[in-house]
Image (tube, rainbow, N blue to C red):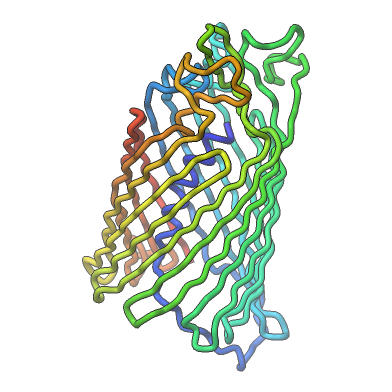
Length: 407
């Protein structure tokens, strides 16, 4: 389901991208412009295997297996060319294909041998265009995306721009995105009205409802080079969601013994505020730290702290151990299995929205030989990242990610 993918990808694959080298890059001079054809800058392939287990499935009211596996793959191709005015135009095409199996989702209809939601494949292409000035460092871009799987489809669009100060020590980035989603209202088998379908087009042609869920997000980032060794960044990412935000195939149980499908408000405001410090100790050590505070109108408050220390073992081998701690005060709408009041307007037993704390620990190994990986000059880097996640609710997971870059 979409909710599962967002959690997995945002937490793990996003982390891999966010820890790229952050040293200031030299700015090219475009005064001696020469016409160039569209050329391939780089090709990236990222593959991740994720496995989790726990005993607080929201599908069965906060109890039961949370066993899940996800095999996620993304391929991106970056090309560029210079226009007659000397501006650089960069085109990035990305294609993602994920496949997951979920024991808890199979409990939507436990009477079937295997419900349509037990496993699924998600496909999500995207296209980004950026025009930049090599001399000033300023840039402007547009993006478009699409995503589809068993119970939903999404169309997205975005805009972004970058502005640098004259001395290149201060950088401001802005991004705005909109995602217009439509997803099937899948219901637990025992709570479906007469004639209501399961949502599986392959096995059941009975009708099911479809509802919209629209998301609007912005990101403001201000980066500053304080010294030759120290950089700091302030990041603010307000967002808003409207539509069907409850997951209707998740059950809730009440103190009077009744059962209903999850019900949550149809709007949600989110405000994460983060600060990042990167300190370049010497040619072999970098200290990266990050802190984020999160709040929303559902009552969730969270603190996240992270540290990563890349260590350069040789000129082309580095190891980066990392650790992340998160603590969260849950939404006022959450209660465990069987503890909801029958008079409650909104209710959930999804432990992702509960009070909790978690630890995420792991390491990244990066190879970037001057003559290319395995002697292939175009195979410029290989990264292998592994992490273990532990949550106070009992959920545990492991992730292994392989990233290959070709130029």
